[in-house]
Length: 43
Image (cartoon, rainbow, N blue to C red; front, side, top):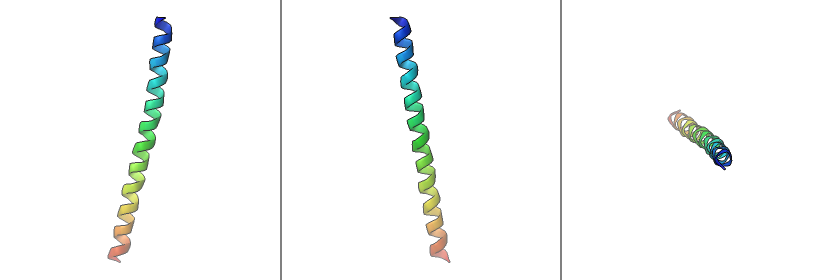
């Protein structure tokens, strides 16, 4: 029983960790595209 609980918690942690990485990567891309648009507007 305890082994299944630990396994479920570990699997949940991996899934949430992977989702967080993708979210942060997406935010980084958004910020980069805003910066590039600002550079184009200034030129």
